[in-house]
Image (cartoon, each protein chain N blue to C red):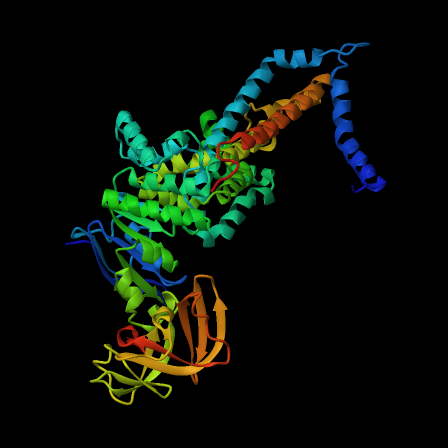
Length: 354
Length: 262
């Protein structure tokens, strides 16, 4: 059943529409990530859920109750900010207990909940420190504990890992996800980092230019991108132009090579041009066997990356990136060499836009 | 290491002499009330004077009232301008600077004309009303310093994010201002308060023309009729001002979170 519902939500500043027709249903306990480049409207949408921005149109509902016009302090939504936003004048314990104090809870209850939260983030020994005495990772943990202490119905995370160094980022994202699973709290996470989105989310909402491009599970978003934008934003992808030969049999032409697509040509017409995408790791060097597609070209570059070897092959117009695992028994091809590559019909993604 | 030039030393010596020589001379003169020996007799006489005590107490009370009203006006104004109305920043800064541009004598004559006993709000018709008028006049006079101090303090913290963090914790506006914003600009408010105190304690024009028993007119009266006591009072006035400045430094350094306000 839908827990959080956004229906036709829009936000405009004058003539500039920053969020357009945003529709989303989130179920209770789900971890949903808004992913997109800077300026795509993901943070504005999050801020509308939090109550810091008022939608120009549309409705936001929690368990069917319309909260669109409700003030932020009445929504019972916890938020973690990119810049930590801990209150500098308060100790760690006071920061964590702030929301409970505001709610008028009794002192023993506040103390016990603060202790519980500090145990949860594994920082009980820092309860009397001030924020400036903590590292970035510790500050963000305290910020998370503060957001969770009043038992909010939804947790919002606005790029909480962006200001941290790479090592802390990875460990903290695992901690956040583990906590979210343990508490079963409905969570909306905003990031522009695809790795964070893919590793943490139940579902990802990919946004571009104020609108949703695609909603899906990480596996679906990565393997079956619907648009050229999603395909190019998530991971590395070869996007090639193809001419449709026979939509029924899924036959297309890529620069003189006749190949087959397993799906995606249902609404296509013979003769039209469609964009197709291919993950570098789905391509193998060598001629294809039964049921596999083959492309021919010239090896243009070979980059040895340790466990992976990245090869760039020139077709006629386009270049194709191929990632193969390093194999000491089979050295990579040399530059200038003519080669054939093959891939499964299922790995050829026909994009919805051209 | 860079060697300092003789020119720089000369400029420093000239500057120090310019500022300190009159002070040292005034202090030395204030000690010469008793013929043929140095003593603090002038200071003793000043402290024993009933007029000194009453005028100093009066000015201190007015200064404290000025600080409370000034903070109550400047903090919410600067906070709202920073948070919601940044486009009005220029206009508000211009308005708060006006007391520096308009001479105090012009302001006080304006007040007397506006609030005399025949006006709708006859504040000058009673001693209490005049005290209120004097206090509000001082609020205006000290506003450039109070507003700037508060504004500088607010700029040093992330007002928007702290406000939103407190809101998401369920706090309303009064709670946010009192529990989150005010404590984090405490040293800025104290800077404004001490500057206000220093201005009000020695102010003459407003108090004299509104005929209030303040410390400024008392200083002028003593100066016109005595020789050594005014010098002692001048040294004391400097000491009070410096003490205020010292406190600003001390509190600014010791505030929790002063090292990093993020």
